Image 1: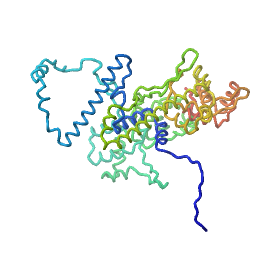
Image 2: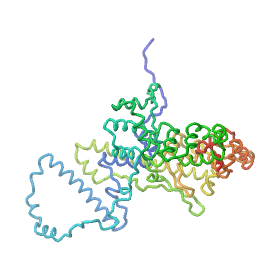
Image 3: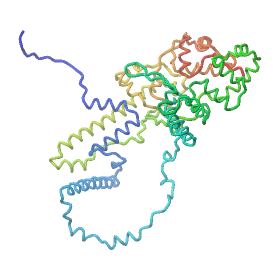
Image 4: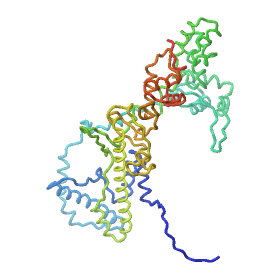
Length: 506
């Protein structure tokens, strides 16, 4: 064994802080990018944006005026900074009496007297708050039930029990007392309403009665433990027929399968009466929380990152920079701060960070436009004719065309939206696997989904098509070779029930 020195050349990928920042900005959504820019502007004094301190863009005499105005704004910020330093050092106490004497206080007071008073009320649409601040928030189911709890005559212990019940409601309005899964993979034991009553200090024998009172609150059937109990509560409260209650209680499984003949045989009633009862049962609500939601879908809006517009025979891709500040370095303020030898190192670091951020944001914008242009080039028929002409495309196709890695394409297309003549789509929407055809070129999986949806929409509702029948129709009409299980998978992804559950007899 010996110790010796040896030279060796090797290549390795080093993730510099600049590269890490560029990758992180690339995968941010539009709203996250705006928030990130705001944070950087607050933390970096040399950064400025158009909203706070606009850069002059005029020409000629206007450009000169704009430069003077920008310099005055920069000097104003410097004066404020110097005043703050003087206050900290105690120099601000030494006031220049000559400057104070130059102020014409009489003229100042006269101008104050001649000023018009502010209007008592808002006088125009421009001064009104934005419409987003006037939108009312939709009440959640728990809030609606808690308001009814406050109006009830429950005792303090019964109200504690009711609060425990409300805390265990799921998104559909049912009482979920099942155990939860621990981090180690085990599950906690299931709860009962008697255990909730003991925790609230209520007699366990009174728990079913309190729960039944809550189930009759609006919406009727809420706080039920399953669908059967929910429908029974509604049937009894609304005064349904005995046959309706019996069918819900004993034949809910046959009701789900539309097996009305079995219900008629077991209850020894004509099948026509079963049909009439089923019509009334279908009027009941199977999901108590249907009209209540934690998020109001009407207020959800998506702002596109890029626009695809047709200019004569050419498709043009433009970025949406509305709301995204154009950052630049405030040179006037930076030069003044660099005069302080103690701040040189600090300002130098902030300048480097600002340059890296500006370069990373610009690179992000160019990359998104470049990838979108490649998608438009490969999916021209989609933009011209519609979803049925969407072609199969994977990340590798775009990565090879633009000269980037597949992981970069994945980051670019995540949470990025494009506005097209066919609608608003996420960039990932255009990546689809291929489905084989008999004689024509392959078709995208998304187009197959739309074809399945179109076939089901046009079927006879009393005799719905099975998955195998859809397979045969696709092969005959469109030449699409697809397995039955694939049709079932696409049907479930579209939220369409099986043929046995889609059947409507009346």
